[in-house]
Image (tube, rainbow, N blue to C red; front, side, top):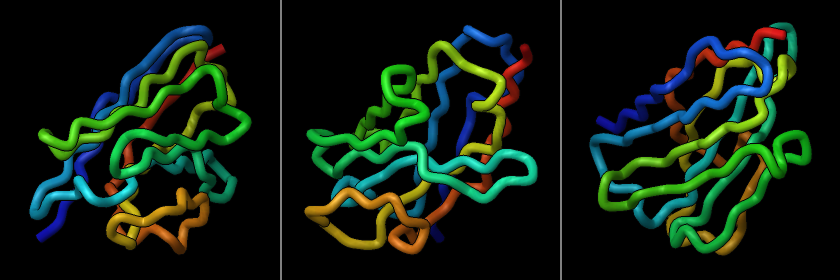
Length: 127
């Protein structure tokens, strides 16, 4: 059974940093794009970032560009999200996601393109 388990969330002051991790179990995802979505209270879930299966390409939402960095370690079946210069508006539940297409050539930003989701980890940024 496939599981994605996120960790690293917590409470941080504005301007601070957090590093999220997501480790997959049940199968290898080295051939699939992986990334993160988030959902703030009262808002729809939104795309944050994705990294290609080869780790050679990344895409970021404009709201996090320059502050967040995604990386992956295929040997550990793990994807990371380094979040710097955090703002109160980054407060959300962050979800790890895996693309549904093996060796895909396209980095997607739509929920429908991802068929594995973690349970989410809470990130709270205080002002």
